[in-house]
Image (tube, rainbow, N blue to C red; front, side, top):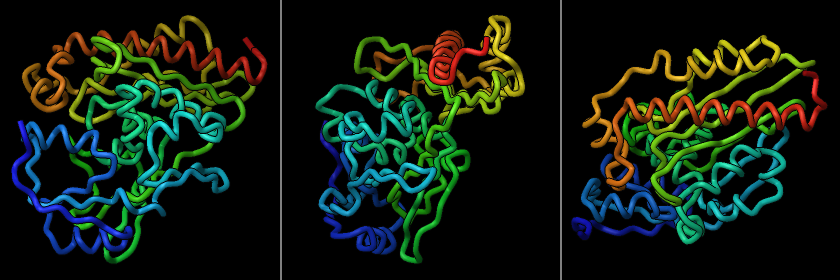
Amino acid sequence: MKPAPFAYHRATSAEHAAALLDGLGPEARVLAGGQSLVPSMNLRLMTPPHVIDIGGVGTLAFIRREGARLVIGAMTRQSTVEESPLVSEAVPLLAEAVRHVAHPPIRHRGTVVGSIAHASAVAELPAVALALDADIVVQGVAGCRTVAASEFFIGPFATSRGADELVVEVRFPVAGPGHGWAWRELSPRNGNFPFAGAGVALAFADGVIERAAVALCGISDRPVRATAAEQALVGERWTPDLLTDAAALVVEGIAPRPDNDVAAHIVPVRANSVASWSYRTKVARTQARLAMAAAVDRAFRTEGDPR
């Protein structure tokens, strides 16, 4: 299929893009890498009357360290993040997860910020932003504001970004001492959206878990945190029994969605990734368990093993 007719607008700056969004109405869409938007338009899952291309805004292509934050601009390609030593050192969970996104040609065009802004519930990078408590910076005609990842994702392909705003950067906290991380997922085949995936970030101090984040993709209409599992981990010393207990709680409190609703809302462009919610939850538990174990091993390997 081909997209419905639309008007094309090429922005020359972030301010110009915001002004276009403000003037063209709430159905206008921003085009960065196009690896999420274009397939959705070709299948007519999205039919925006206006498309605003920010591909020529070079000032939005950057990776920079600002104190305890790593900041990634809206036009930074996924392949650039994948290959960046700075990202691998400062935000290793992002560096690991981005390698699971589709295939290299997709990552050479797709952007990290664009994937997060698109807010697909089965995509890796929105879940990573959630796991790391990233901040999403959006810009409108009135200026910029910052939205916590926990408040950004509100539904299927829906965010708290205003209709006249575009996402200009995402700010990730830099990994500190005693930090362990891992991304694990199960897909029908390499490059497909996962049935379910899990991103884990742990912080240890003297062998005790001070912070635990377990974020999941693929099992709800948005990326979600496994809060029950996180609560079971925080304040505890690591033991095999703790891993078993936390893994059992991974989907606790996450409301199930009807299987046909899952298929309709969270995997609309990859039919071979459709699976029932019950199957996805089994996969989520397994992938979260694997990710937790790997995160612990990495934390102890870098800080000395207190077990």
